[in-house]
Image 1: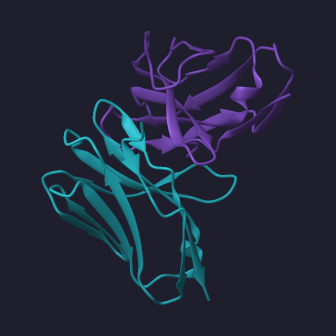
Image 2 (image 1 turned 30 degrees about the vertical axis):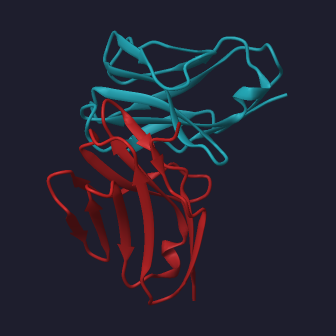
Length: 109
Length: 112
């Protein structure tokens, strides 16, 4: 039973435009949410996180939004760059980390 | 700065063979964990440890053993490999069990 879901397996965006990656979760007890980026043949690397006491966190081109009532978080990348092409995983923390299935982002030059 | 080091990067086993995937971190992290990544399944937790001498099961522990004799090392043992264990394995560590994870580069395991 997947507690963290990423319903879009893939996303293509033009360079310079906004990329929006979505994530839904089922457990209202989750209190910490993270996004990871993964290139082929490498391990996931931490991108940005947000605590459940906040609804937005920014780091440069990356912003994460949290909607607790909808149990939904999203990652916005503005502007998107070709180097952003990777698989993005969202994760939620309760007594352990639960990961989504990933969204493969392709940024087209 | 090595971070989390996993060996080997690739391994092919025959059904029934045993092996150990090695994981070491040099960040003095208390929390270490093993995940497997399968297509369409995301990352699933196999076993984790909150400190030396302490281990616990994750979501998919069957067929795997772990031990944590030092803070730095957290090996994952496959006792009798099965084709269902064909996967990419990632070791991860963090300061505590509710902080961001740092991942190794992964081990691609095929069981024939």
